[in-house]
Image (cartoon, rainbow, N blue to C red; front, side, top):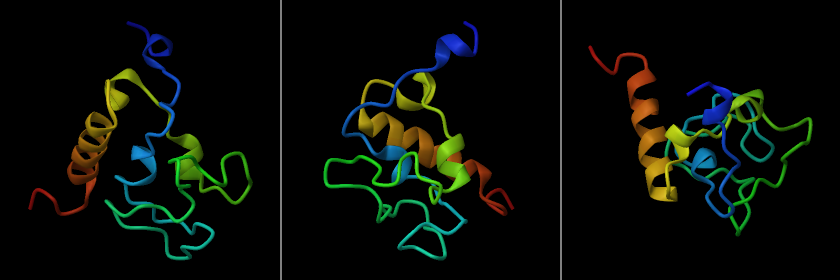
Length: 95
């Protein structure tokens, strides 16, 4: 499967990518970023991004692309996948 074939559209109402990963750059309303597992203040009640497409959206968010592997078939899968990735890439996690 090619990389482009693995890309998918975001699942409406998911918001896993706005909850599971840590974001170290400032977010409007969260000047110090956010820790993993914490809901972003820019995540709306319907789990959409309130600053999608705005210049104030962190580069991390704009660069995170939905994929079949990451998103799976449910929000729960995406939360687990992103949480596992967060833990695997946290400095000192394997010391």
